[in-house]
Length: 436
Length: 166
Image (cartoon, rainbow over all chains, first blue to last red; front, side, top):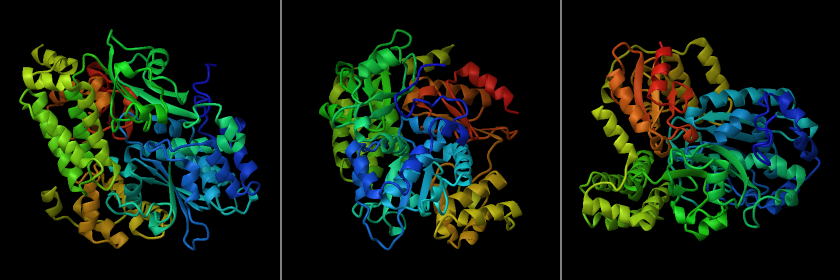
């Protein structure tokens, strides 16, 4: 038996057969549901989650209990819980592993969260590429229904709850909560202006809470053991653990569950075994490709909401992308910008046009055809997107551009003055192959 | 896709099993429109792609205007409005996979198969496509073949994989 991979969500994650309800129950699964449903009041549940300080793990970091408390009481409309399993932020692959290996924890988390704010229907929105995970989840939902854990009268408590999975079809934008709701309603997945916020007017214009997979999976643990217990991990403002998805040329990439606040350097050097092939760290994107990068000089920064904010970036979804010293950062940024250009839904002009132009400018810089004013032009275009479109996709496209130029301006200037990359092992390998 | 849309084809009908599945799916939502993605998925599974006649069938089943269903189907990247090969090679080109050699892998597949992005081999065996992040960043380069993820690929491993895909 190998050591547990993490203190909370990853503690039993590699237990063989955990996808079956019997194995999940042998490890204490659904005990929280039995202790809470009909025994604790919904308001008590909201208070415990508020006190725990749990914040949304999908990227925005909004306090979960507070979000639930915004759902109006006594509304004649139905209330909905939507699980955001559209995991699409580049660098992030935690929800995929969590759902593949422990679907019942998500079901229990959805059940308890729905109970707390009074939803009777939960939609589980998966990205289209996760069709095979939909089958795992459907099987688990069937088992839970057969065991009386879903349905008209869950565990005899009188509480009614049903979960339906819903498969997307390839659109990064559907991870944005209002776009996700449009998609679920059968429209193109385009975002809506907020307010009204989904808690007041969401799915079918009814009160709706949208929570990320990892967030929901924390809920059974918190309701079982209490807020103080949960706060044994992490910091005052960032309680609990975070699953960090590490990618790039480190020796052991993968998902790591750590207490919030772990320094980046410890993650990369100790948990991931350092860099491969004698490479060194040049930059790290700490929270998915939408957040500004950090230079190697800031590797001692802790991975929590407030420490990351203090150095001008975000822990986001926890997608830690490690970039080595032989990679060209103009090429890197061009790759990132192309992603947002491709994924912009086209609704807002600043994002639709701006992502296109940033890609164009980066392409000519990368190919040595850049002009001196292109660097400032990039910043200018980014500034004209930031905060000027409906949803966060525009900001997500603008922030990396501003961040890369801020920390690594010399590399961009080198492209203008020398008309080539300082380093570029990826291009070299392609050229070497072509000439072989 | 415009020529595919204009293609004239005989009306299609749902096979009985698909019809039953659609009835089940419709019961999950308060209105028929919400079922548009699940029903498009069922159509794609039945016919391997979504021919114009299937778009018309989906629109009729849900009571939606056909152009709107077309607009929805084209908004998403995973609905095939043209026929595709038996093995759909979807190579992630986003940053983490790119850092680990996705660009090289894609060029290798292009030259080995003699097709480019979005093209299908003449024998109908492979369709090659660049895609964006698949949520497999720790196992880059990653390629999804139909629904199956294949991670940590290099040229040699990709070659061995292709041999198994007949």
